[in-house]
Amino acid sequence: MKTGRFKHITTTNEFLILNFVSIVVFFIVCSFVVTGYTQTGEAQVTEPKGVKDTKVASNLEELLTTVYCYCGCVRETIEVCTCVTAMSIENNFRDRLLAGETVEQIRTDYLDTYGPQYYAVMPAEGINLLAYIMPAVILIVIGGVAFAALRKSKQATLATTDAQVASESQASDETVKQVEVELERYKRES
Image (cartoon, rainbow, N blue to C red; front, side, top):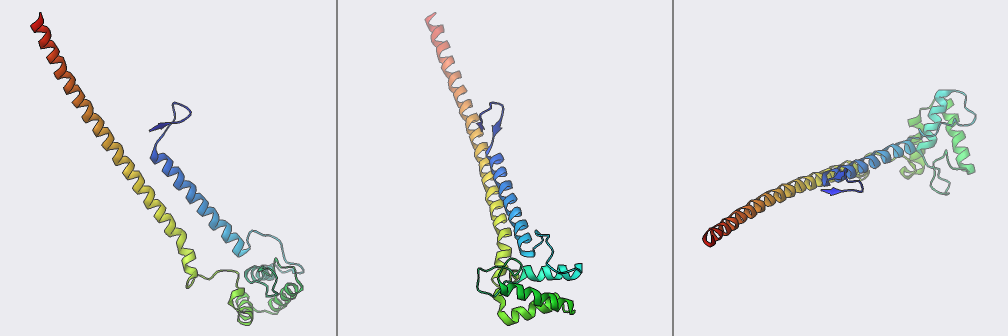
């Protein structure tokens, strides 16, 4: 057990490992939250231009944040891209929504025309499923390593304590024998 800067505060390996694991879990949860907001567009509350109906506005927002612009600029969603192509795609999506088409129909048609590489949300299938599963696997591995380290640390502490007790009893046995020898010698000299 180590004493820190303040003598009354002690830290153990278990305490340090638990703090490390909790920090790792916190960062992983934060990364999931941030990724969820950026993929679904919920972090932005702005309403698309020229749309009065809230249902059409939310459907348009979903479309604009879930597909990439095919213009050839930097890989950005249609909502973020500022080129003329993105503006025409947005107007096309708006007109189709007002005509009564669903978000899925419009998105499917767009992806069929330009390809699945323009889908901004990673589908949970195939190799992409690995990206969804790996954080949980990493957490389980980190938890297993932390558990094993804690268990080993506890066993080492118990073994050290047992060794100290054994050495103290041996030392006390040797001390008793030495005292008896000294006492016998004192009696003979007196």
